[in-house]
Image (cartoon, rainbow, N blue to C red; front, top):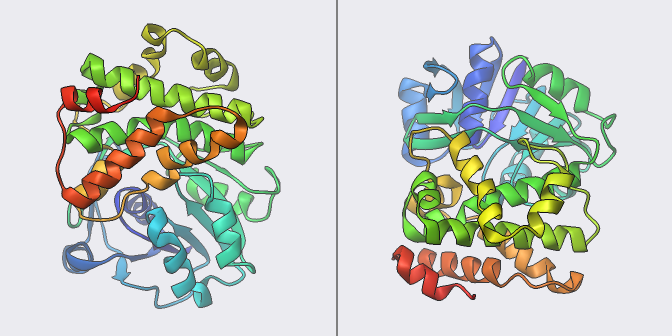
Length: 331
C-alpha cells in the first residue's frame, strides 16, 4: 500500500520505517538536515524494533496521493501539514497521531472529507540526529474515532499497522487521550532541568513534582466527568485511586513509567523540541490541564507553573537545577 507520513520525526519516523520494512511504499515529509539525510542515505531506525534503514521518498510536502496518510508532526505543525497536503488527503483514511486532546477535532476541521482516525503512540523514541531515530522502548498504539470503535477508517488503519506495531482500538478515544495526558505529565520536568526522564525520576524532589502534576491531571479529568481509558497499563480505577493517594504512593506511577522506558536515557518529547529549537507542545499538555481545571472547580498550580517554566526556557534557553525548580513550584 502507498502510505504518506507527514512528519518523519521520532514517532512518524518510527512508523514510516516499520511500514517500509513490512513492504509498503512509503512517502514522508520532513525538513532541513533531517530531510536531506533521508533523501541521501535513508531513514535509519535503531533500538527497540531492531536496526533498519528505510528507503522512503522524502520531501517537504507529499508529491502524490497516498491510500492511507499518517499525520505525526508536532501539534504546532499539524494543522499546516494537513492543510498544505489536503489535496492529496481528500477522501482517504487519515491517522492523526498527536498528544493532547484535539487530534480528531483538528483533523476533521482540516480534512472534512477524509476518514479521520486518532492515534496515541506509546513507544519511547527520539530523533537522535538527522536521519536517525532511536527507539528506547518499543510499544503499541491505540487508535479511535469520534464515532467509536466502528468509525470510518478504523478497520483499514488497524489492518495496516497491527502487523508492525500492536494496535488496540479504544471504545472511548477521549478517555484514552486523557490517560495519555497523564502519562505525558512526565515530559515537562526533564525539559526544564535538561535531564533525561530516568534521571528526573531518580531524583526525589523532581519525582515528587512529576507525581503532583499527574495527580492534578487526573483530578481535573475526574471533575470533568472523564472515564479514563485503558492505556499503557493504566485504568480508570487505578488512576482514580492514584488521584487521592499519599504522595509517597503516588510517586510509584512515574517510577513505573520511567522504568518502562528502559536504560537508555530518554529526553522526553518536550526536551527534544527544546534541543531542536522547535516550539514545544506544553500548551496542549500541562497548559491544557491548568486551563481546564478552573472550569471543573479544581486547581492545577503545579501544571500551571510547569507550563510557565517551559515557556521561560523556550525564551531563554536556560535550564534550572532540581533545587531551583523545587523552589519555583507551589507547595
